[in-house]
Length: 256
Image (cartoon, rainbow, N blue to C red):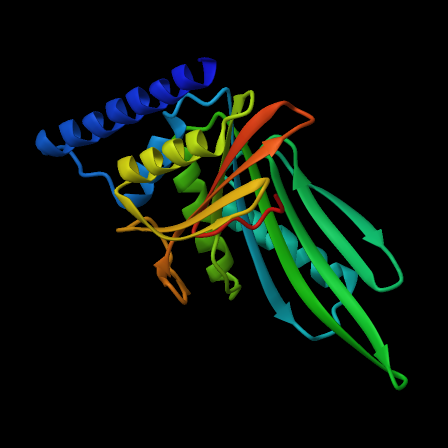
């Protein structure tokens, strides 16, 4: 019964969100773009817990760079992303035999930029590849704020010649275990309120994954079944006793 009540709450919250969007449009103030609608619907789904993560992963080059150059690169990226007056970041390093990582982080903004260098030796020759992994962790942020930060990170990266898509990942959870049928009901209700359609789905014993497409919901990826820009996954966290919903725009990068 408890799970059924939560399902009803999801429907009601989503209906309120959709009605609000239509009201704004009808009033002629401003029509929501697809991304804002997607995030707003997820935020208003009455999850017990809700968090947000931005992520960008990109191959940089195969050149050798001094530590000072790597630090300067990370600081310039941070300066291009951070708001004026933001707290100063902290630089740390981690080294192993095959990999070195220089990490710039700022606790106040939930930001973490990591510069990875992977080295390989073959026939006496040493080769290396450099990668960037950028993450921003948000708690309780408004939809508009999350999308603003996503755009700012993309612009800062592009300004430094960094390629790749900034993914927006939202995580919400319900206490207790929802059956697969209930998981499907919630997932389909969310996609419906987002104006998205399911393109493909994968069902496993402990995981239910949907790939969907929503007009204007963000960058598009191509699957054999068609174009997608939304990735919704539902799983059971036994340790926490929660059913977890993860939404990726366009994909979920974090392991789940």
